[in-house]
Length: 441
Ligand code: L3W
Image (cartoon, rainbow, N blue to C red; front, side, top):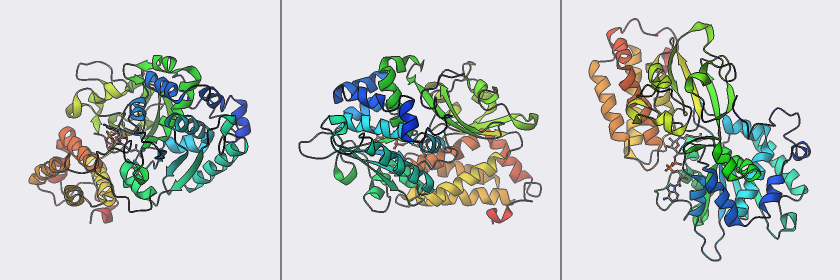
C-alpha cells in the first residue's frame, strides 16, 4: 500500500472543519513555515522535487523562483481548481473533504511568494465545494490564520474563491486569468508567462490544487524526506482518479513506484476489471493524453514493467507511451469501442474550443464530423488518412494546449487501433447503430 501524505486523514469524520483538522496537526506547517524565510520555503519546495499536479508536471520550486518581484507591484497566487479534464476528479475530492489542507498550503505558498491576495479559481459546476471552501476560509480567519497580521507575523493574506462559468478552456492558466479578470476566457500567448505578467498584468503563480496541498507535507516532513518517496524525478505522492471498467473507481494516493498492473489489478487500488473482462486500453492521464493499448500499457518498449510515474508512462514517446497528465485514469475493457470513445472526445474538444485559432476551431469540428460519419456507417477508408492529416495540422499550431489535447487522442487511436476504424468502414451495417444514434446524425 502506498504511503499517504495528502489523504492520510481524509477518512476522519469532521476533518472538513477547522477544529478536527487542527486536532490532527493541521496548520502546524504554517507555524513552522512562519519561522522560515520565504526563500527557505521555496528552497524546501525545490528540494522536494514537487512537480505540477495539474497535467504538465512543471517543477514547482522552479516556477516559484521565476516569479518577478518588481518594487511596489503586488503579486498573486492563483490556485487552478477548474478541474474539467474528462476522467479527472481528484481536486474535487481534496477540496470537498480536506479544504483546510488547500488553505494551509495556500497560506504557506502565498507567504513564500510574497502574495497578499490569493485566489482559488473553481469550476462553476463545483458550486457546493465553493461553499465548503468559503466556510473553511472563514474558520481559518476566525482562528487567526488568515487576514491581518497572521500569527503576529506582520504578514497579511486574504483568499478569494472565484467561480468559473462552465468553460473547459478556463483550466488553461492564461484563459483562467482572463476569466478571473472578468473577461472572456481566451488563452493568451506565452511568453510572457504568468510568473512575469499574470493576473491584472502582475506577477502570478498559477498552481493546481493538489500541488499547493502537497506543500503542507513538504514543510512538515522536509523537502529532502518528500524527495525520498518515489523514484527519479517523480517524487512524493500523486492522486489518481480512477474510472471506467474497474471494480473500485475512486481517488487513490499512490507513491510513484507501483506498476500500472498493480494499480489496475490490486485490491488496494482499482481491484481489477468487472465480469472477468480483459483489459483493452487505458488513458492514464485525463482525456488529453494518448490512449494506450493493454500490451504497451503494462510493459515499456524495453519489456520492463510500466510504472505509475511521469517518466515510465511517457517511456517510448507518443508512438508507444503516453503521459501521467493530471492522473485521470480511464480504463477500457474489451467490450469498449475505441472509435466511439474517440468520437466522444472529439465532440468534447470541439465544443470546448474557444475558437481563437483556426486549426483548433475548424479542425476539432472536422474530426468530430468524420468520426460521426464512420460510426454512422458512411465511412470511407480515405477518411482515416484524412483524420490523421487533420490532427497533424492541429498539433503544435495553436496558442494553447487544447489543440494538442484534441489531436493526441485521435492520433493514438488511429496509431494503435486502425483495424477498428477499418472494421467500422468495412461493416457499415453491423456497427453499434442500435444505441445513441442521434449522437452521430
Ligand atoms: C515561467 C518559463 N513559467 C513553463 C510554466 C507555465 C505553466 C507550467 C507548465 O498545460 C498540460 C496540457 C494539458 N517561465 C516557463 C514557465 N512555465 N515555462 O509551467 O507549462 P506548460 O505550457 O507545459 O503547460 P500548461 O499550459 O499548463 C497543461 C495537460 O496539462 N493536461 C491537463 C489536464 C487538465 C487538468 C484538469 O482538469 N485539472 O489538469 C493533461 O494532460 O493537455 O498539456 O504554469 O506557465 N520559462
